[in-house]
Length: 371
Image 1 (cartoon, rainbow, N blue to C red):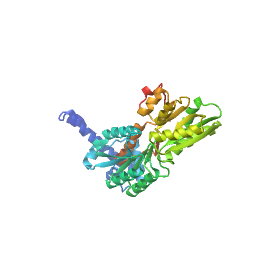
Image 2 (image 1 turned 90 degrees about the vertical axis):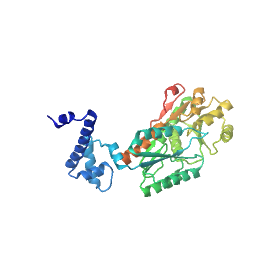
Image 3 (image 1 turned 45 degrees about the vertical axis):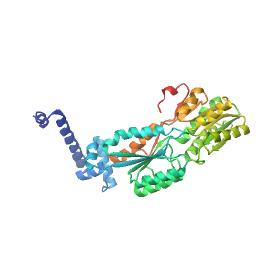
Image 4 (image 1 turned 30 degrees about the vertical axis):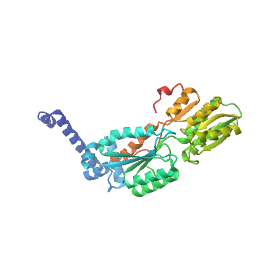
């Protein structure tokens, strides 16, 4: 009679299952150590991402782990360590101007519900999109909390660079969502391919354009030279260049994002260029432009912008917005937090860049779309 059969006559099924799982886990570590010709303690260091193992040995052990499809008991390990891992989330707060950041926050909360049993604590911090100082204040608070990882929406480039530099010194991994910061040593970026997103926007915009047309690119943001918007605009302009389509592209930066300022600036530019046929908005504030066009009775101008927000959906249904381009913001929040968990708890590598899909939402398909 096998040992497991003898034990099954004594122990209830659940206890037997636990013992056999423990035996299999222990045997797995022993087998990995045997094949790698190292001690069990060395394998344990690699599995739990602890220092003291050379890169060559670490690679050898990880290759064997993949080969054996070994799955460590993460929950038991985390409970035994009793160490809390704190992850900070620094994103814009939801405001009257835009509720875009509700979606990434939902994704973060969904991820937290899955990993909190492993001793993960999520600390949310919010800044004002119209106030760089609020970003800096929140960043300083995070660094005082001694967190082990940060999920960041780098809306302010220079201020984000300062935070990342501080994190590098403290060896805190940082994940970017929604927009990237060039030439930074972050853990990974999860968000849209900004150039291609702008390229798609230009292609969509051509469906109503005539020859010798004028197009207006609108950037509604306090940050005139925001990296994300510049990348999107580069992609937008490249489409017309690549397809040899004669097009005069006019750009307007609206730094004061309130409704009155948007109305004032758009009135001026349309007075100066009455033959504008289409407008491309580089961010989620496309509803501000749609509201202006509706009040001005300008349904002849096609309009494209970003994000599946309540206000944007309303104007999409009414036909004032032709297309919305979306990049799964909730999924970005979820994947961003899980990337930190994968690195800090599982000790497994993550993709340096994970581009989200470029979804195209119309009046006809909006009812079936999930952000």
